[in-house]
Image (tube, rainbow, N blue to C red; front, side, top):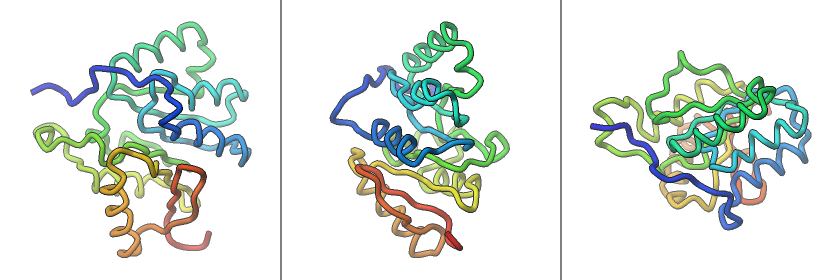
Length: 189
């Protein structure tokens, strides 16, 4: 069995606005000094590059399952080594992550939740979409936010998962921003 990876890479497309809208959010909210996790970099690396262009106000840890996207990242930091201080991209299957391998995050993008899980990967990956969300809930700061993409190809499955966890009192809807829906931990906000 091979790693569940993406053979292609994702260019910046105007019909897929999740990264564009997240960058808009970061800029409009003047987000600084935060640790951000980003699921799915795209070949464009818009989130990381925007952070670098803004003077690296945040630290971003991202993951891609696309060899092409990771190769583009490598080329980017070779040409812009300062970028590697604040933007790091892992290559791998997100469903193999563990709590020990992740710091605490203020912001987490899970735009592609429910899009890539494959039951055949259970041979090497312990997580599924529900336990992946639980993993990031456990790594989220008390005042942190999780961002999801309402136009995701599998958002109906993602929404059902979010609603179930909200009904269980494990997360709360804190708002919407353009094509993104935002959740956080329950408690004083």
